[in-house]
Image 1 (tube, one colour):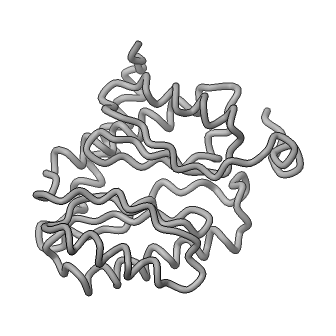
Image 2 (cartoon, rainbow, N blue to C red):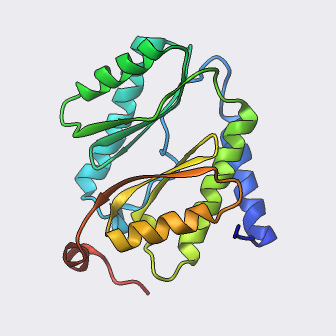
Length: 208
């Protein structure tokens, strides 16, 4: 069953989507994702040093991607705990493989999840809709009293929601179920680092 949202919350999400869409330019289709939606360091399950390192990986990855496809593609890179999630579109299969090879060679990167699609770039409307979906999913996690919303990184590409984070299997299953119930979501992809309940108890802050 798809979830309904309060008009005020939807309006805020629409405004966020419009703000992102306004910042996109046809002459610069390559963007680094997740910069605006990163979890707060205070409640992030990564160390503060890893959070900063992940931000640096995203910037470095953009530079390497430009070396491969220039401005011919639309590629988003999200780094979480030194794992790079790569989404978007590239013109040809060799471009997809070359980007993965370039990013896998980055120092201290643990892995690359290559979710690139070979085809035409998504439209501005597609990207605005993806931003709205991401906002809805995040809002749903805030409302869920059994989840820490800031433990999850949410990325949406053409209606496909990718979920990252250091979470337990229970949290992962719950988060996927919630995301699947959000209107507009076509598919949910798990990209979690699964930790034990014992490790969570040692590291998670108390939930109010």
